[in-house]
Image: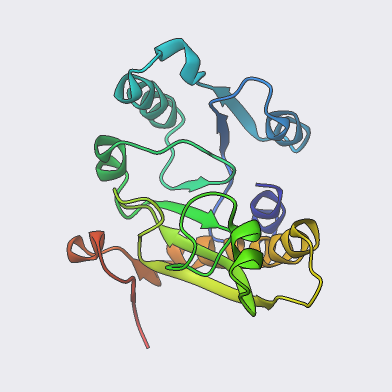
Length: 193
């Protein structure tokens, strides 16, 4: 989130970070966004019990009320329903700490080490109904070193995330990448030469 806020401060950046929304009232990002002068909103998922779509309709209402055009997920650890994903199709990105399509889901650093992978990294992708399966917008690898711990690997991957997420949002905001209807299961297309 902070990498996006910092990138958007540049005069030539094509997007404004207009709102930070959290489903957790105690999220640290809320205070950090407020300190940066970014509007915040809380849509506490616990108030909706098991009604995921009801939560997402409230979330969508908040986004619409702030006239949001694009959504960038960061640290949002809930699976979204097809209703919400379809509503924001082509306008929602996610950052994932792995080189997709490898290591979808949680605990990617631990799993990369356990599998003996030599490369790990981060991926920014369009959000589609299937978890961590959307077309890739940006991706960068880091070497896995002998004796790496989860924490050391996570630190190197986080540095990559901070670099590629602003690049991916720029590409989307400038119209250089888009999600075609057939891409709901496939790859992102690059526009232009």
